[in-house]
Length: 119
Image (cartoon, rainbow, N blue to C red; front, side, top):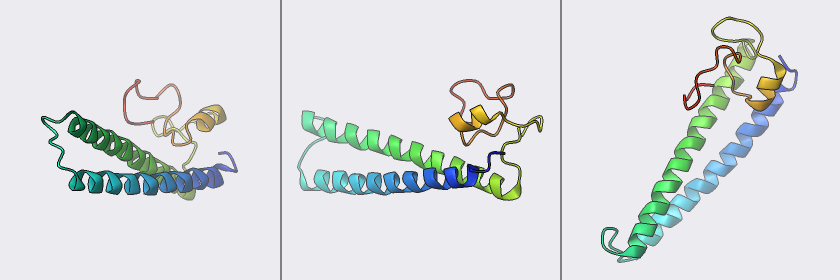
């Protein structure tokens, strides 16, 4: 395990928490703006834009929350000493993989296929 893993994970978690807080403020502003408008999402071209922006921001926020949960799980693995070990075979995860994906739970050989939510 890399000795700086805990500090790196905490720094990434802190940055992500800040981004999530900003996204939540943006969502509140977007909702407030749509409440003050008489836009009809179904018939008004501007209404469709507001709905699309709200949907996009909700998706981005959801992705950020999921990544934060992965970072929290990685920090828990650091704490219990299992960080950097493949959950499938128990072998060490190469430092290069952990550098690229600090939340990795498996070695490259046991990595899920592209598009899967696990790392």
